[in-house]
Image 1 (cartoon, rainbow, N blue to C red):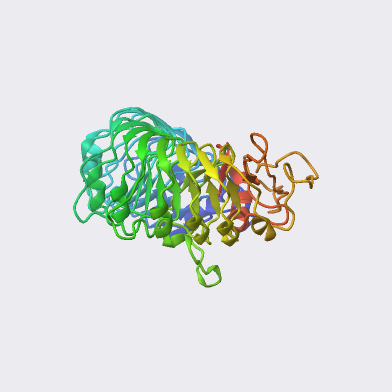
Image 2 (cartoon, rainbow, N blue to C red):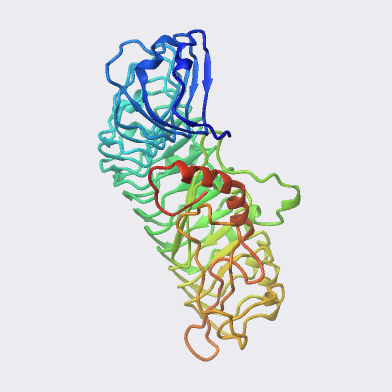
Length: 506
């Protein structure tokens, strides 16, 4: 990254033999009239991203940059309607993300593969991408209306992200089977209603299905059983009903299962599948009507939360080079959006259901677990001594149950500074610090965490809530690592962003 500032020198636009121009990640500003590019007919690569340029178009041109293949104008000050007709036969990658574009005129591009329009101010119906498109993102805009079945003509589509908009239609039936290359379908945070598409292609490549925060109803489609590549299934915050879809345990690569805040009910029960959910490491069934005993059989099978040797594992995120998965994590009522999911993050949230009986001792075998929330159920008995094995645990919430007995000394033995009621040792402050909604240049990766034990009920009936996020003597390693690794990117982005979005940790 350089620190170039001011406007782009006009002499550059006289370099008629120029084939590649890269001025990204500077402080370039001012108005740039696109007609200045008319002479650069040999230009194949243009990257002006991460600047503060304002592009204008005074006249319409039918032929501009005829040989351009890559055009990146992301993170600038482009506004209004974008109708730049460039690279009709050659353009295969166009990135206009993080601008203030309110309208987009789709051009008849014949070679388009990557079209990134996310984080703008786009309104109206969904622009239909060229049939050759592999990556198409319009997330974080203001698009509305229905999804035209014409999008299913994009038979080469691999990643389709329509999340964080105002779409309100039923989903086209073809959406699950229109492309054998489809790996990511992200529709979260819209107003889609009706049922989830019921048909998926045999031998499909679907890796991520994210329908969180819509108004979808009906049952989880049984046809998902053929999605053998599925790693992330997020159906949270909808109106989906039925019993627990135990047959999902047969999916060999499923790592993330989110069913929270739906209308699921009944006993989770047993599975006829030998060793179900062996790859699962994030499971969120909170805020449903599940009942009966906690599913001991499933706990015993969660191999991905056991014996993780972090010293010999490469930390990476779920996803691909250009697109990585995100998810919402709720901790003590605070929703945090992780725009990337670290492969060492493991959590189980079964809170706010109607589970009964005792806490299974086998949970203590999940010694790589980072978070466990069993609060707001009807659990009884003692806290298992086997919990002393959960030495990687960073969040533990057993509050609002009917547990009895004492807090196991073995559990607190590896937490050197436990404090708060009902223990005799008082904490230095009564405030629980929450992470700020927007991490900016003031953040220095240091946290002021503490641990609190919160009592509920009376006598020996207690609830246990270990911290909001982490212990007094430490930091949430998975959270700190994510932020430390990306803080420089965040600082640069904040300098150049024209507006802020909701609370995101990236």
